[in-house]
Amino acid sequence: MDPQHYISKCHAELKSAVSALGGDAASPRLESLSALIIQSMTGPWRSFHTPEHIFEVGAGGTPVEVVAALFHDLVYAQVDSGIHVNLARYVAAYVREGDKGLVIDPMDDAPAQDLELVMTLFGFTRGQVLSPFAGLNEFLSALLAVRVLDGILSKPVCAQIAACIEATVPFRSPHADGKNCSQVLLERLKLANQNHALGLDDAACLETVLMGVRVSNRDIGNFASEHPSEFLNNTWNLIPETNHDLVSTNTYTVKGYRISLQKMEGFLGFLQPAAVFRQFAQEPSDQEHQRRLELTSRNLEVARLYLRLKLVSITLIESLSLTLGEEVSLSSIMGKLPGKMDFPIQFENYLPKITNPYQAQNQQEKIVMELLETGRSADSVHDARHSPVASYLVKSLGIPASMQLLEHARAYFAGKLSGEELLAQTHPQVVQGLSHAMVQVFERRADLFRTP
Image (cartoon, helix red, strand yellow):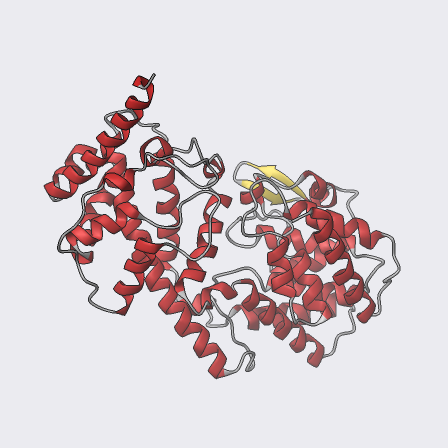
């Protein structure tokens, strides 16, 4: 969609929220801030954390929630390969590049009040190394929001917005003392209220944390998708954000694709539903919270099995492709990939037909096999919807036997098993079927050269 459309929508939401919060809704800075937000959210690597995402996170929320949603993903260092140049001027004076990453180390002439406020809300200190997996992006996004909204919104409201952005730091387990992140945020907000004379009473502090819970839960709302395919659609949009090679659809390698799946499987493999969604002071209700946890558990189980079967199948393809070299492009083996012109030579067309295919043993297996065979419900810019090789593997061997290959694949990833040894652990008929399809693809391509 045209970036100007997003800028106009962002400006309208920002102006409406600022007005409702008693700020300067007539400020000409709001338009430039809207452009700053959308420009940052439409970088070349953004495929999930996009303008649509921030509008979804703010949808139906209070004015504070709407503004927090617009700013919460502004900085995303591991996706944007650093801090977007248009944002750097607002935060560069507060951090420096250290041996282990960005460090909170403000320059002597940098205004300290905003930094101290946001550090209190995040529980950060000067000299701290910021981790991209433990609040770096949210901290800098909150600091940036407080800085650019100065003079447009009051300091107490800016603190509330920053607190809601802190709440979007995802996937946190309880602290060592048993307190959850919402309880800790409430304590920090009360401390910031005292130290910075914000004038928020206890009720306002509690309501701020509840707003943060709502923003956080909408931020990762796709985990509770009604159908696993919807969850996988979003997962597939996340993969290229931290695997930039996948953006080059026609050139990314078999190994590169395998590594991207391996990363996502490793992440989802250990994620627990209780660390995904938040509940605090009956926000949301017990019934709604339990519904989200149950859907999340189901979606994670399906996604793990789906990813692991795809991971095994692409590892077998990688092992076969090693005879050609380590940097073989996936498209050279599989044929057409998304966004490319029609190409009649497709790997899947040469896979043997399975006369007595494996039948799903339970609902989870049924869902996964349908996803492998017919595909996810939405297109992806870097991958086909369906998974013909994984489907062939499952139909041939069944899911239990296919999953047994996963451990051999993990040994291959660790360098403890060669590609040839991995193939030797696989049923010969499956290896022959894959080898036959690969040979047919290359022979048909050779025929094209021979055709006068």
